Image (cartoon, protein in one colour):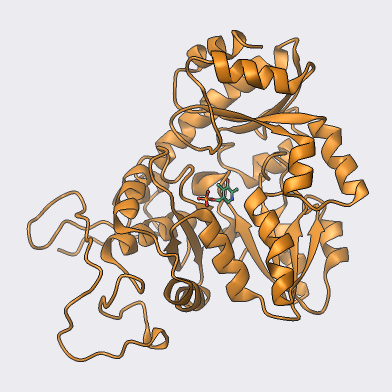
Length: 402
Ligand SMILES: *Cc1c(COP(=O)(O)O)cnc(C)c1O
């Protein structure tokens, strides 16, 4: 059954459903089976060093590759327009795979001053122990990236829109600067999803996702992935999958692939709900500011409109009154939205991020960067992941606590 999809002509909604999937040749099953086997019967004696691994190697052992995980890798690679992809047990396993595989003793890496807390902490606590020096840069200012480049800079890592400020980075511009200095560019595309932004088409070398968020989309499976050229993904697979070992379970891959099938449809609804809720919040007397790339009030709305095909469902807002007290009200009284961390699910999630806590626990900012951060975040911001409920019900829910 030759049912290969042509990625050059098929559109995202089609790729999301059929990418990586094939009717089962043994049974004709239309939906994918889950292959849980950790080992595979060899037809002839094979070598088992990771260095002998190719994309066409027969399946050997679950840490090398698995058919269900491979199907998800094909799907996300098609959605990102990548040659290849590899999956991990979580988004953090994907991020650490990139950082630990590409960086060595003596190298320098540029990390965003504000990004996902786990990645910021890894840059502060782990990389220096391995002799990697780290610069924290507001990557939304390309000139600051250029100024931070050194001869030993091997990687520029970007998070756009960034967590939790929703600041954007011009991927094409930063890729030009990094490549001119001989560095690779990796983009955390979790907030935008591949429906919103395709960083590889803008010049990035690697793109990662927490599949736990939009790609899986239902809050019931953790996972991560990295997409890029076959050569870079092969390096990551050998070192991070086979040697560090944080591989994705086939069951989670199956759940995430099922979620990914509806990603383009869900992202349209996330955007629609976020625009409605964002406008409601912006007009609310108790709200100081809203940061949503889809609203004209976002300072980089023009960049968002060119770099993003979909503004996603992520926004941050700040209240005029006491944020902690409002957070307690939300945790107690919201009926639809869950007061919970994480994002990108069909359920709406909201969580308060107090500035002092984040700055002391996760970010390592200098005085000017801290001032920048506080200028928008004040004492704290609410991170809101607008789900797929009816926007009118969500507005009523938030109206009851604001
Ligand atoms: C959640 C998240 C991660 C980490 O992913 P996990 O699946 O929780 O390990 C990394 N980057 C961003 C932007 C995230 O939102």
